[in-house]
Length: 125
Image 1 (tube, rainbow, N blue to C red):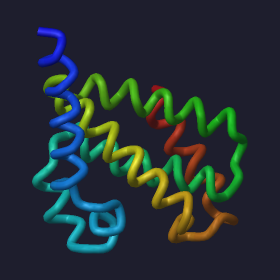
Image 2: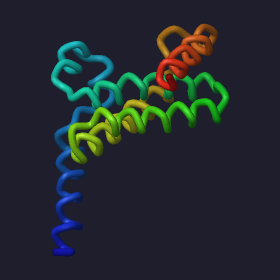
Image 3: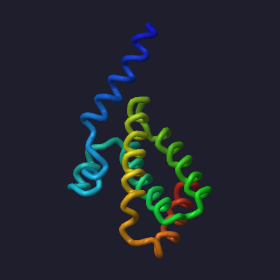
C-alpha cells in the first residue's frame, strides 16, 4: 500500500509535465479556447498567476504579493473539483507565475501598481 501511495503521485506529476502545455503556449496561443477547456480552478490559476507574476516583476511590495499568492491558493482550493484538480491548478499557477516574472506585465510597470491593488482587493473580499 505504501508503494502505491508513492508511485501514483509520481505518475500523475510525470504525466502532467509531459502532457500539460508550457506557460508560453498557454499565454501566447489561442488563449480563449484553451481557457474554455479548463476547470474553474485552472482558469483562476492562470489569471491569478499572471497578476502575481507581474507584481513580482514590477517589484511591488513582496509582502503584498505573498499575501495575494496565499489568497489565490486558497481560492483555487475552493474552486477545485477534487484533489487532482487542485494539484493541476497549482502546477499551472507555478508555471504561469514563473513565465510572467520573466516577461513582465503587458501594460508596463507604471500602471501595474494600481491594477495589482485592484485585483488584490477583489480576491480578498
